[in-house]
Length: 621
Ligand code: G6P
Image 1 (cartoon, protein in one colour):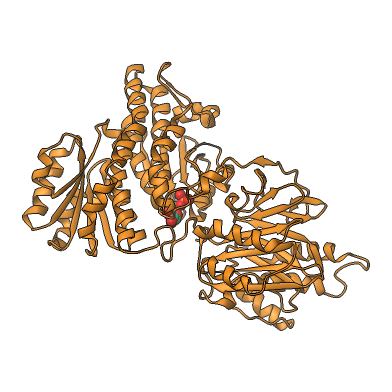
Image 2 (tube, rainbow, N blue to C red):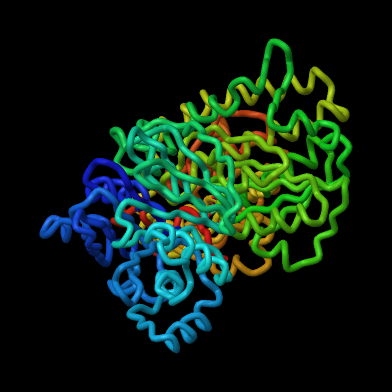
């Protein structure tokens, strides 16, 4: 949610830190700050409320000189978004600065104890206990043998402090008495160490690193990196050496630049034809009539023998899971249950060795999804990741998985990740189905239809202007309904979520038939109702629901199949999608809804990529 950037090298740190923060701004954006050590061993700090541009403006007035520094963009958890709560936080001596992602659950008792030892506090955050705890051990008489260097003292004090913390953290630490060293450590919150040429960039997200180097070490949980001008050492928090692997960051700078688009969300909507092509590439083979998913091949037997599938995810990924429930039961004939990851642990999920657990996450870092994964693993399920971010915690902790390959998603409202997730889950269902019972001919029909999806998506995107013009007169309506049946029910939920999160319009998605059990009371001409009604097995029933809305004066917009002229009798406006197999329709019908939400938000004057109160990656429970 929050973002961390740290730099140690031969360049001035300030510009690199601010640029890195800008790349992370999508993760959280209510305040920010930076602390840099200068050549005289002074630690200087600047913090600001609001966007990174406010911090940059402040820095213009008196910059931070030095080649080692740490910085942070915050999404408030403990303490309001005011300057005193922005990171970095200093210990009470002003020598040690820390930035932190995560939550320290026992900060209350630690704070009390530190105050009793003479520490003073200036913020309402949980984070401030970390520099003070490090400081306590660093300064404690008799803690270290005489002759211990300041650098060694800082490292040891940090290790001691971290063992006292309950909760989650990704931190970087800098100290004016060891100006050539940065410490990074993580437990439950990601950190990546970029290894450049004579320089190191540490960040919570590879997006802040990729313009400096494509070589990176993804720190594991409970691991620490001590970075100096001579190199780096990785170990566990309790000082057992770790042989870390330098990996290649999978994407390029182009993929995280806006190019000619106004917003990342717009760019990501329009990337879908290419990205879904990339997602399918090398996995479906039309000539051979086969489906290859390298990441799950070693577990093919368990997949085929499974008796039950549990899916856990949050937000948009949960909607993709709901689509997969229909697909898995239809194609793979595998009983499937879908849970909010945040609820999964609080039931008593029945899991045995014949249960597969599919964990869906764009970021691979959502804390509730990670916790659900760990719970399922403890109970003995084979865990399969459907993840976008390569090297993320969920990708690393699952037994096997299939990456989306849709490139980094930066817009807070998820778009290409949803279609990527549904594509991967469809391939997974076909992979299992073919090995269980599906005929070669039937598989071929699905592969052929999947292969046509990217071009069909491109055709839908041509309606962009029409969708903008259509939505404009409805933008003052504060309540919307999205209705669909079968495969289109999760799409209705996703359409409503997109509208809510970026345009701040109240919207509800539900199965079309459920409307009669309450929501129909709300229908007036002030409430637009969007029906997702492609040609499908429940078409006639949905049309009846449209009649019911029309009879009560409701204003209807519809997403329908090309060539369906009849639907115009019921809907004032129709967004057409090309025909495909019913199981694949969500991959197409969701696109007009993404565009509708995008245009509504722009017309209403909102910052689409940075919607209020939201974060791209939710790393707190
Ligand atoms: C946040 C984002 C959503 C996303 C959800 C799950 O709420 O704003 O767009 O769907 O987290 O994220 P994940 O990275 O696990 O897919």
